[in-house]
Amino acid sequence: MSGNSIFLDTNILLNLLSGDETIAGLRNDKTIFISFVTELEFLGYKKLVWKN
Image (cartoon, rainbow, N blue to C red; front, side, top):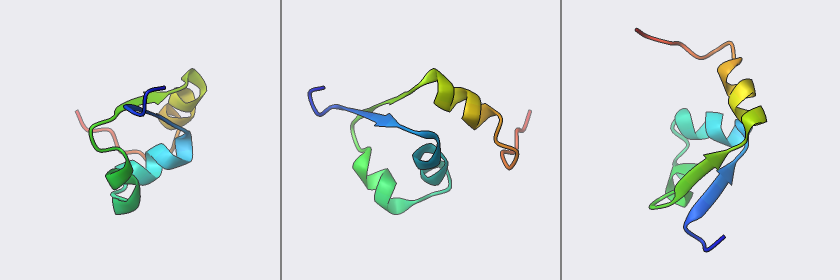
């Protein structure tokens, strides 16, 4: 990778979405990638609230 991309696991993704400023600062101007497994874990996370 050239330094313009970041690969996130489920825990980091959840922390990022909950407003963790440390993680938010690391992702500036970077393309975020997640694995299929992370996507499934994330979509199955019970504390997520989906609004229509």
